[in-house]
Structure formats: C-alpha cells, structure tokens
Length: 277
Image (cartoon, rainbow, N blue to C red; front, side):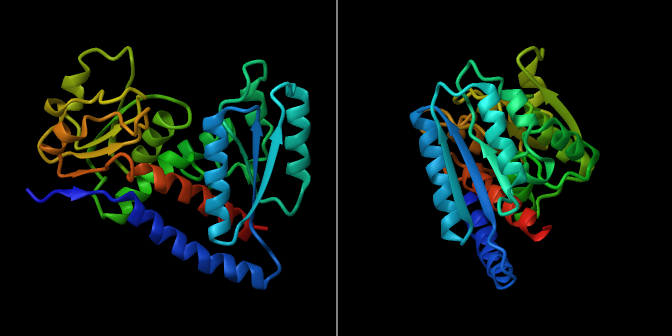
C-alpha cells in the first residue's frame, strides 16, 4: 500500500503563493488587506501565536494590526475595542486570541465580532452558516483539514468519516464540512462508548481531542486517511503517529501537518474579506 504523508507545509506554501498574487492585485486598487489581532493579558503561548500570525501576514503583504490589552481589561472595554474595529473600514479581519483572562465573557466577545470580519470562524452565526453550507469563513483548523483533503485529491463522497472531538471551533464544524461534502459522519467525544470500535470503521479519521497520542495504531482500519488536528506539549499530536502510520494510507505529521495550513486559511479568509469590500 502506497502511503502519503500529508505535508501541511507544502499545502500552506501553495496557498500563500496564490495569496501573494491576490494581495498584489488588491493593492493596485488601493486596498491593503488588514488583520487585527487582539491579545488580552500576558500569556506567553498566546503572545507567541499572535506574533506568528502577524509575521505570516507581513510575509505576504497583509497589514497586521496588533492590539495588546492589559489582563485587567473588563468585558465592556474589550467589546468597545472590537466595536471600533468593526467600524474601521481599513480592517478586514478580526482575531481575538484565545484564551482571554477568566473574568472576561469570552463568548460575548466572540459574538460581538462583525460576521463580515469573523475570519477566524468563532461566532455562532459563522458556525451556523458553515453548517448550512454557505459560510464564507469556517473555523480555520476545520478549513485547513478540508484544504489538505482537497489538495491531495482524497475522496470524501460516500466515505465514513469519524471525528474524535466536538469543540465548537474544531470537532463540530469539521463534522459539518465533511457532511456537506457527502461523507457519512460520526462525531465522537468523551462520553462515546466503544470508541476504538467506532474509530475502526473510519475511512477518514479526524483526531481533535486534545490528548497526546490518544488514538492508537490498532484502532485504524487498513487504508484509512488520518488527519491529526491535535497539538500538545512537546510537539505531539492526538494520534500515536508511528503506530497509526502502519495501517493508514495517508496521514498528517505533527508538527508540519494541519498547523501550517490553519494559519494559511486565516490569511486566505482575510484576503477573501478584503476582496468583498
């Protein structure tokens, strides 16, 4: 059986090269795509992620507007900042870095982002539109998973997809996206009985549970496509890669799989939004 290592860096490079051309065309029209990132507090990991996203923007000519608010910021102050960005016609995308300090109503903040600028796919309206099949900006990791499948021409129609995880910005939306492409989808979670037996039925497996090396090799059906959306401490995914590699026909590594494409989809959504102005 020929195995395919699903190289996210290659997919991301393909996306960003196309985006560079689109950004250049926009600039000839006097439009510079702009992504505003909001960081509340001083979480080191969040600071790193925001910096990475900003640098990725700048590499392809997108303006990165970085807003850093103190950890004492109240919900009302954050909502005011988001509303100012909603009203700013030069800003095309808004990203509120997760998590925010615990005293802030994060869901209320997410919901205040204008749907036209919800390039990270965090609003309930955006999720609903994704489920109905007409969402412009799905959550970026689910969008990345679909982009990898598309890039490698892996069939979805009629396949049994099993998604392990049901978070509102990963497990649930990727289940909807797969369903919209005519997969038969089973969504599993921490209360699922006989999980290994269900995973063994998967033609396409999406691991999005947030537990290192959780998916075991003997759970994988021969020839299954394995997409690991997990990223745990020590650059470890949710899939036991070496063990699952044996049965998989195609598999994403961690790092270098879904992660790079996730950032590329954020950039793509920002450019998409700028083109709609």
